[in-house]
Amino acid sequence: MAPYARFDYFFHTYSYNPNLGRFAFSPSSSLFAAVTNQWLSAKAFFQLLTLRKVWNYTLLRFSFQISRLAGKPILWGKPTTLSIEPTTSCNLRCPECPSGLRSFSRPTGMLQDQLFEKVIDQVKSHLTWLHLYFQGEPFLNPRFLEMVNYASQAGIFTSTSTNAHYLGEKQVQEILKSGLRQLIVSMDGITQEVYQDYRVGGSLEKVQKGLNLLLTERKKAKQDFPRVILQFLVTGKNEHQLPALKEWVKEIGVDELQLKTTQIYDFENGSELIPSDLGYSRYIPAGNGKWKLKKKIENKCWRMWQGAVVTWDGKVVPCCFDKDATYVMGELKETSLASIWRSPSYFSFRRQLLLDRSQIEICKNCTE
Image (cartoon, rainbow, N blue to C red; front, side, top):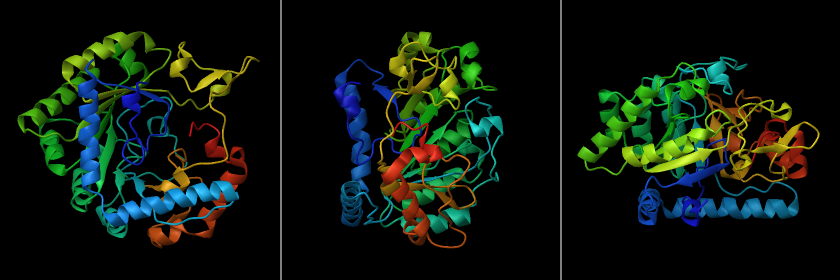
């Protein structure tokens, strides 16, 4: 990745995406264009900061480093980032996604605005970044953009991820009015045949049409936001399309292209989704016919100090890898996030990852 693409995104570069391995490219060959995109997002982020938010982040950072040295969890500060799940529902059936596979072992449903507003009211004084996504397609929640607006009005930088099948004229106008700062669009093929191989049930034409409409209307409105990031999961089935993809993003004018590594559940036995160019893979051959994580699991994780994930029904889980909410730290319908954040169960979880993170199931396929 070029140095400018590794610009430390404010406090936490793309904090919430579970597929951490990524390569970022400006849609233009110009370094100026890339820096401009990063600068606009950074400017919007910093404009929402307060001394209290900065101090809270500083406390979290210091306590994380001290915890690593001490080998036990010490926590100063409150979560600076949060991921909230608008819904578990999805219109697609992606093969490596529990939402697409309809394979959740936890309850499924839609986030209610009363619960959402209750959470935002609790965290708005110290929260710097809200990612309105965990599993599912956010735009299936009919109150989704109202939630975005509520958080934006509370002075929080807002982001979401979408498969972009719901970018019609009405939705685009509502997006532009919502205050959304970042929109991540998942598109993993440049032809329908390749695209639908992973995004099962999806329409590439619909995605491209909606994306073009959003960018066109944003330009007409003379707005800079939301910044539009196109994310492309590089697999063994689509890696040959990368040259054509880079040309297409130049033509349409997205703000940034990210090439992401793919998370594969049973990676040990290999998969046709693992690209031949292992630079785009989070897995490498283990030498015995098996595969292993490219990056060794270390007994540390900044995410456990940085923020948390909230499911549609108010369960607080430690990480976006806990897709089935196996490690529930508490329930927001019963107590406050501040109480859950410092609860014995949360401290016990942090203690375990500092001692031996390999014993935590959700950490075994993580690149953090």
